[in-house]
Amino acid sequence: MRPSKAPDVLGPALIGTTILLTVYGQLIVKWQVGMAGALPGSLSGRLHFLARLVINPWMLSVFVAAAIAALSWMAAMTRYELSVAYPYVALSFVLVPLGSAAFFDEPLNIAKVAGMAFIVAGLIIGSSGT
Image (cartoon, rainbow, N blue to C red):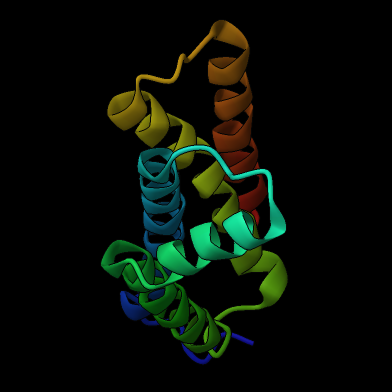
């Protein structure tokens, strides 16, 4: 389903945009939910808590980022087979823990690092046949 043999710079950029905006969303949600505090116990308290989050400008940016990521993914699907493009989305499972370690001081232990290394190795091996 690849249209030509010429180097495609837009295709990888579209996939990269999808991944980076997805990672952005996860990190911003964690940051803003952490700043909002604990989820209240009552139903009305929960609804108010969530409503405050939904109208938070940072959270609104997450919704915009998700929409752009979806559009970018749709455009990427015009250039790649799903089985070729989708494995790269697994890079979010590497970038989110790295971002959470950098921004939230979440621990990176040997098991997490090994898991991330397996993901990267899988992408290298899996993409070598394309």
